[in-house]
Length: 166
Image (cartoon, rainbow, N blue to C red; front, side):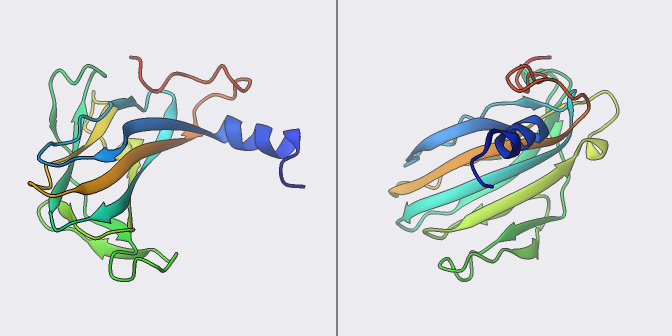
């Protein structure tokens, strides 16, 4: 039954949520996003949720690094993302190809999702972040969070491997 400790316990053991950029107006400012470490996880899913969107376009890219400080950063290639951008009132996400490892966030009330397996990172790199450029001088609202899954260990709830430490 939903809400019972057993069901919540399984969900909490299987994932870790990381707030990468809080919900706010990003007018004329790029998002400063948290780095996440995949040392303890096999998969990361980034979610970008938009609110009101005036008219800007904010380019989205992925980066990888050997440390959560971002030292030694390099671009991380990716080929697709999922979105309901064409029909923001639809809950269905459609797989969409990206060009040159980037795409634009540009529609109100939309969801954009990027899936990354730990095996896609370069040898010696286990940290990544999702960078979102400035949407320009427009009132454009969004948030970015990551869900880490496929834990490499099975600890008790509340003692999972940290996603923001090396």
